[in-house]
Image (cartoon, rainbow over all chains, first blue to last red; front, side):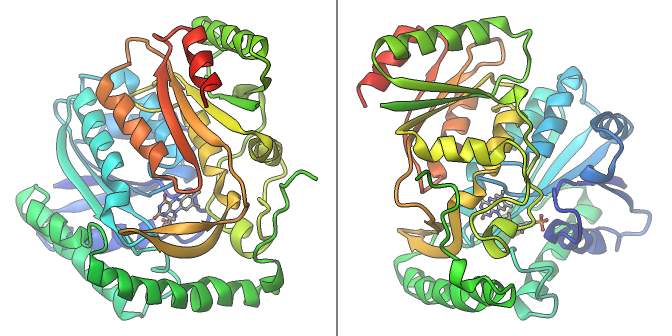
Length: 222
Length: 180
Ligand SMILES: Cc1cc2nc3c(=O)[nH]c(=O)nc-3n(C[C@H](O)[C@H](O)[C@H](O)COP(=O)(O)O)c2cc1C
């Protein structure tokens, strides 16, 4: 199988999406004969170039970070430009990968419904959406056990897709956990976010010499 | 009340959308609201590039010196903000979406657990209530409207009030705004 992958992260440099895509492809390409092409959406000359690539592809993975509970504006623009292909993608299988900062999968569930709907509008076959929270620090903490676990998990999903041509619903469900925080896990998460505020965000503010201004309100009118 | 309408219609040719907004503004002014419309398609709005400068380098301030900061200042001044957009491929326009993303400086990077999920702590003491106005063209369907509303409701720092479509007359939408 030849897979076309779009990385829709709007970042200019290294993105968490890229790491996740690489993890997925590591598993996918274990099956002999499988290959892939990866395009960074914001490095293409135009949206039209992306559309031409899609027209030429049968198996597509659209990967991006969650931005304000849905897709980044650049990814939405791509979807808008796909309008002429509505009903004409009967030969295409389309899957999605959405990763983000908050831990709980629930933040991406409305978007998941939307992605399925868009695929239906195009008349493509919906493979599913890989949802994974807690990904904000992946690229920054490459060697952490958390990063390794996240990348191993997506590699498994890629491997099974490479073997069967399908996203395993069981693996997706397992991978996206937790859906929300339970009564018990809330207590743990409360301590976790305190640590994250201090040692993840706070440390970076300190590093940048602006810790004192953390709470600045520059857009408040006088 | 200070009302801000973010007009996310990307195409000037969509005259019925523009007419509707104008009629709505007249109604709101008639009802005594201090009403501002920002026609986003006429503004310079870069898309967020996820650099987190607004959180970690120049806290609260976006790296782009375009019309984004003007929009955010107006946003914070308003008591009520109406996000208006045609439904395009089942969702709000990428234009309006880009403004939603540029609201990142309005919250802090710091997290807290609200009920069963994580959220960001607010940067400002007061935020406007918000609502959605969607068109009712051939792209309209209830499922899309529900999904869009859910996305807007998810954001914790804003009080989401209602979704109306242009099937409701401008007087009706103005009435809903009056009732806030
Ligand atoms: C404008 C903006 C909006 C974001 N919205 C969300 C969100 O709604 N939920 C969330 O959990 N993370 C959100 N994030 C965090 C990103 O999804 C997260 O950092 C992701 O790992 C970035 O991926 P990338 O490095 O591939 O761009 C947002 C980040 C930015 C810059």
